Image 1 (cartoon, helix red, strand yellow):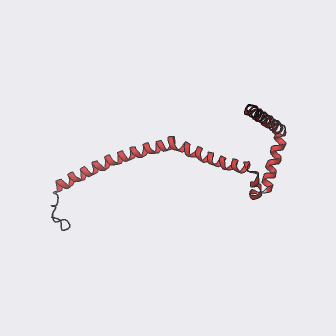
Image 2: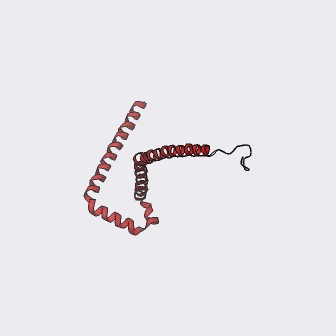
Image 3: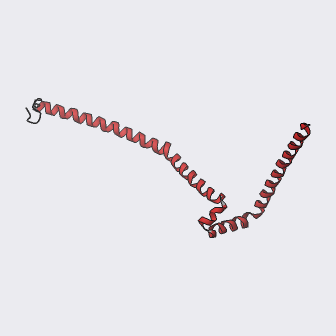
Length: 128
């Protein structure tokens, strides 16, 4: 009997060998199960999750940059020089396209305003 655990008898030499074999077998099986689980989890992580992390990070990054560009007042905080350089480069490279786009925006706005005017006139006519 062990002094440390007096209620449990010591194993015989054969019992100790058998216990060690059971423990070694269990350890081998657990390591294989854990290895397979880890391999599967890592595979899922890299194939299923990582692309979303990257795309989500890039989407957030792009959104932050676009929000900075959209708010022209950010030039006061982010640096007049940067916004001036961006503005000049965009205008220089895309002047004709910008003018066409602005013209189309104005035409669309005129169309909407005409529709609103017509709607208001119809309301006024049908009122009486």
